Length: 181
Image 1 (cartoon, rainbow, N blue to C red):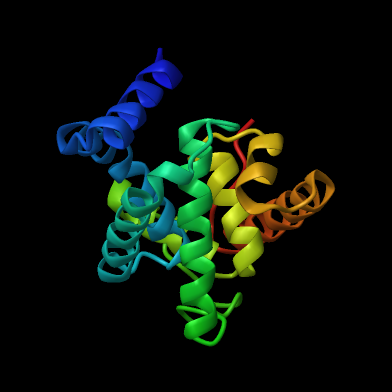
Image 2: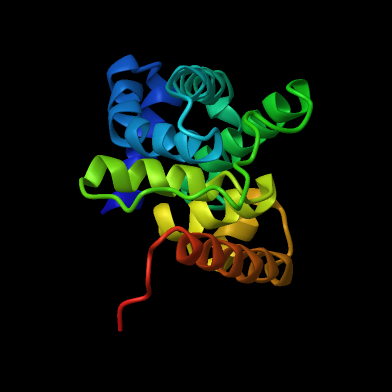
């Protein structure tokens, strides 16, 4: 149903210039796109909002180029991914400085604190690792779909995931988070 619904909205946008259909697409995906950017930018809400807005502007302007060869959400995240990397290059490679791995972070007691801790933990990762972790764990994308979004080979994605999990595990363990079995 989701894919069919997306295709109907896209067709209505392209064929009928139906702005309400595009608004439905934005409503459906804006939270996911903003969360994607928040994870990649270290929680920079202003930048994430700007990038999300740019993503939907670009999607609207290029909707006719969507051929339906992949799911609409894969295509949408590919647009978002490309915008992120364009901005990353403009910023000289990083949005925020990685946190020194030796810094102790107090154990979170509230859900908000846990989100802040995870944002800090993600900041120790290289941008490619952060991208793959975000798509895999936050957006729940399969390896093949991440490959379609990023253009990376599946083996590279698996390597990034493995290294990122190891780095995150070590970092969180140093900061008071123990693995519960």
